[in-house]
Image (cartoon, rainbow, N blue to C red; front, side, top):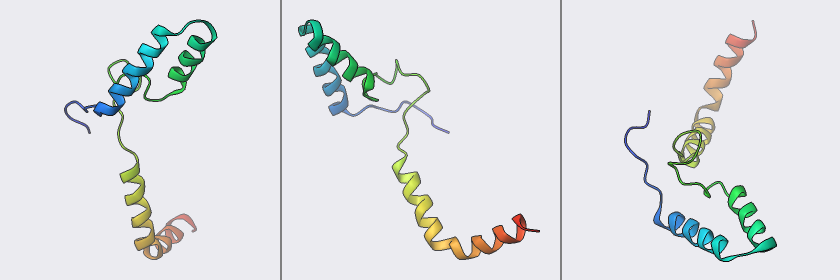
Amino acid sequence: MIHGKIEEPVAVTEQRAELLSAIEAAEGAERQALLDELRADPLGVSPEEAEGGPRVAFGPFLALTLLELMLFYGPLRGLLYDYLYI
């Protein structure tokens, strides 16, 4: 479905680098709090290290689905009722 490499935005890479440098400079409870923040952040892991494959933007697919539902709800409803309720 997806061919080629999906590039990560520069801002995300920079933000991750800043957080990692802050973790290296921190000590004690502050360091632990920053590590917890990194683990909780879905973008805290680079795509190469992440599990589950590449990240795909979900928003456009959701918007397209809602648009199709708004435009074709009437005809689809009739077909679904015919096939689902015998």
